[in-house]
Image (cartoon, rainbow, N blue to C red):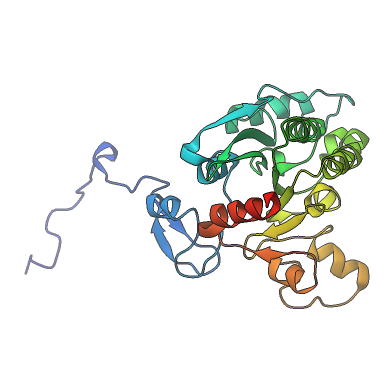
Length: 281
């Protein structure tokens, strides 16, 4: 009865001949566990087709989505962080910067550029969470300030895409100073009557929320984004009470009057373009 019982023992497939599924071919939604190919997930703008969960996108992907034909001029591309405090925790800050730059291909946690959206000029500054949690350091503040200066000089609307864990602790007060610096620059932008649209994505927290992220002429957000100053756990421990369902999601923030509207990524370019036209009329 050898048809169901192994007759020859010790059959081994050499490791070189084993067929294994390469990593990175599939994406599993962390919200509903729906599985799609990575290629299809990317083609759908990193949005789950089942539950509309908006996974994170990087600055390069946002620029490709928003700028016409993905054509733009990058601003201040070579700015990099110094080490004003000679900071060291588990490793030197300078070593952490170099390692993160090699890993991500980014100079710091923000990319800025100028191009067109539906034929209209637009300056975009977009944060990258992959670079030390999208933390706001001196370079982030300086690049935002320079992008705003470009908007003021050329009378071009400014779009800020926030995605951050907050201020960068390795730069301490130098990081916190960026809150005042960027807010002051936005005051000059408003004085010149140049439109500012702030897009909050998941997550937007800490000093970023407490400054430029909430100062837009229009404050908009993607669905389900975490938006707040301190995280839910810290808030719960501080007030000693259970938090409402959906606390600090973009839907909760909209309901309480801190957002103008929520927009799905598939409609993002159209909505921003319409908003700019509204400002220009």
